[in-house]
Every structure is written in structure tokens, then in C-alpha cells.
Amino acid sequence: MGCNMGSKINQISYIKAVLRANTVEALSSGVASYVPAVFMFVQNIIFLFIWVFFFNYADNLNGWTLREMMVLISVVCVSFGLTSFFCGGGYILNQIIDRGELDKYLCRPGSVLISAVFSNSRVQGTGDILTGLVMMCYVAQFDMLAWFFYFACLGAAALLFISMIVIVQSIGFWKTNSAALSESLFEFIIILSSMPQHGFPMVAKVIIFTVLPVGFMSLLPVTIFTEQNVVLLVPLYGVAFLFAFIARSVFYKGLEQYTGGNMSV
Picture 1 (cartoon, rainbow, N blue to C red):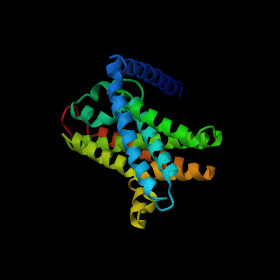
Picture 2 (tube, rainbow, N blue to C red):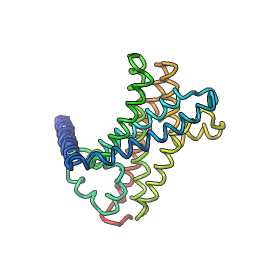
Picture 3 (cartoon, rainbow, N blue to C red):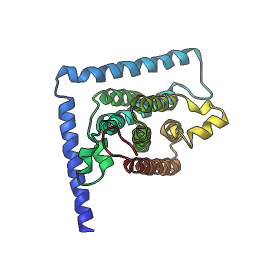
Picture 4 (cartoon, rainbow, N blue to C red):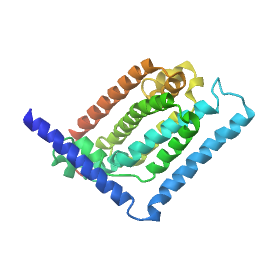
């Protein structure tokens, strides 16, 4: 047990060191470092204004107003931005597998998955985080209870985002040169999570609350935030941990097939 505890401590120390190094590297180019973040911020604001214009002509969308839509966009932006900036390795996991670069993580102490996921940082994630926080400052203002529910939902949403990216990126274990496929699948998840899903037909709702848990990534957090329902945090985190377990299982199942480079057996 002592060895196991020591390994976990080494893993935490390693992650801290990698996060510091990734942050310094991501921001080392001066003003140029922030260009992707600025473009991402502008892109998100444009998307928001599309909904602002929509609600100028429509009082509501199946009961939702601009406030609910801003909460949804904010949750998606911040949770996606956090995973993108801190867990950028997950977004290129397929490429890491395909190039045989996973080998260097196999020799390190602790979890191969965690080491790979935290191996890279995407600076554009800060643009998503900033967008979401600005919107939430407008919605929640000084309501501390609203902020509590918001941050409570973010933890589960971020865990679901990184779990889904690990699952789709792990396709690389079974199919070579599939980085574009993994990226397309995750983009589909992002698009779906950014839509007002409460108006979906029943069949679609079953899908987004089971196979593709985008309902737990955005729709349920909006419900929890607006109703300030602490009980709903239980299924939210339950599903988040379930998909984290599934993601881990898929990755390590694929790792059994891994032989380095572009080879799978």
C-alpha cells in the first residue's frame, strides 16, 4: 500500500510539473500566445449574438429565454475550455497513439492515461473560459447561490467532456489514421451540447441522456442552475463518474492492443 501511495504522490507531482511547463510554453510567445484565445472569444461572442438576435424576435424557445441559453453556452464554454487548456493531450490522443508516442508514457510512474491527457495545453481554451465567465457574470451577478450551483455543475460537465474526448480519441487503438474521425465525432458532441435540447423529441432525449451524455453536459446543468436543485447534482455526478470509468476502461482496453507506431493487433 505504501508503494501505491508513493506512486500516486509521484503522479500528482508529475502532473503539477507538467501543468506548469505546459502553461509556460503555451504563453511563452508573448502577444502571439493570446491570438488563438482572442479568436475563440470572438467566435463565441458571435455565436451568443445570434441567440440575442433570435430572442429579440421571439419571447421564448419552448419556455427558454436568453438567460437559459446564456447559462447553457457558459457551461459548455468553460467546461470545454478547462479541459482544452489543462488536458490538451486528450485532444491529440489519437495522434499520440498513431505516431507511437505513447511509448514514453508507459515508462513513467502512475497512470498512462493521466500522463498522456495532461501532456499538452491548448491556449485557445482560455478564450472559451473567459467567454463563459463573462456571460455568467452577466447572468448570476452577485447571487452567491447561483455561483455555487454553476461551479458545482462545471466539475461534472468538465469530467464528461474529457471522458468523451478520451473515448472518441481511443479509436486510434483500433483504426490507424483516424484522427480526423475522432475530431469529427467530438465536434458533433460539441455542436449537440451547444443546442437547446429541451425541445428535442423523446427518442433524441433518450440518446442524449444515455449513449451520448450531452444532456448531462449542458441541459441538466441549466435545469440545476435555474431551479437551484441540489438533488439533481447526484445523478449529474453519478453519470460523470460512470463515463469517466467507461473512458478509462476503453483506453486501457485499447492499450492492450498497442504495439507502438501505427500498429495494432
